[in-house]
Image (cartoon, rainbow, N blue to C red; front, side, top):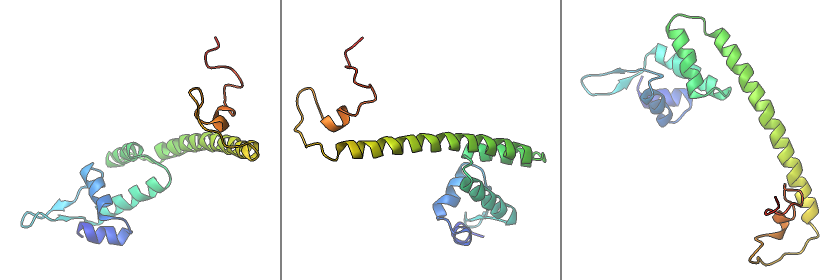
Length: 143
């Protein structure tokens, strides 16, 4: 199967197939007569695995580690479980940070709804943001 055929079959851009080929995660057979790359069933399965792993949040580095385990005939499932647990912890933290940011944004909108517009000055860019500082009223130059 050629690049374009594999891309169509897995509903990805041909550049996606080329990228994973270029970084060595999938390895096509190259036809010496015309230079075309052909992907056999094994490489098709690897790409399907890669796409599924990316959909679950695994990085290219993670996927390389998992594939190396598999290529050495080692059970990669313990590594996958460990990595997904780490990813979930990271995601939970990012989610909490995003919720906190959302709360600050909502508070800013509420605080700013009745404040007038002001032109910038030599000491101020936008009074809305500067009045909503995380410095909690401290002057930048205070020590």
